[in-house]
Length: 220
Image (cartoon, helix red, strand yellow):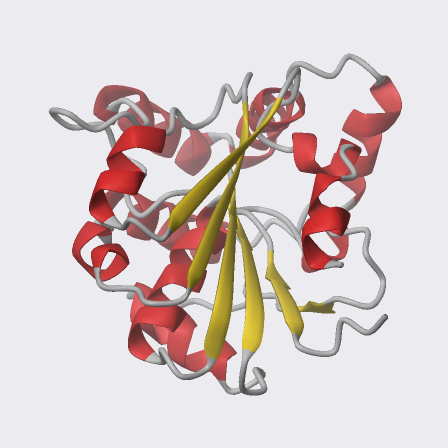
């Protein structure tokens, strides 16, 4: 089996090495300091071969959706892990509370390392195994405060529901039943794009896919 055309984009604050599958091509962006999501998409798409399967975890899913929207002929399958086209809560849309997100941004600006520690606890939940927490921590990106803050602001401001609605490729969402980072919208996603499929991981959270065989099975 070859994963030659499978690419993975990590979540905010992480290196792509967090993905355990060794044959997946891994795309990093933590060293980039762009102001717009499309700039990340334009930069990363140059590394993709045609007919790619594109995996996007969390914020990486926003980048993956943007790439697929801008370059539809590049992507044949979109696998979104605990991710969706808009992260901020609004009427009829579940997501991150706007007030909480503003508090998180201010906290990260003043105390980046401490804020990342608290974020890691949310990402690891509900898994209580300390080795899992250590694994996640070992794959954190270097704390480039300016870059990470810009990416948080992009996350806050991005709404790709219209782009998502127009996608023509296969779309699979992998969601954790106990995700404490992002509330997700199975019915709304299906309403936006009938091609969207959803798989729930029981007893898993925002990074629960790392403890499950489901991702590997989806790639086989």
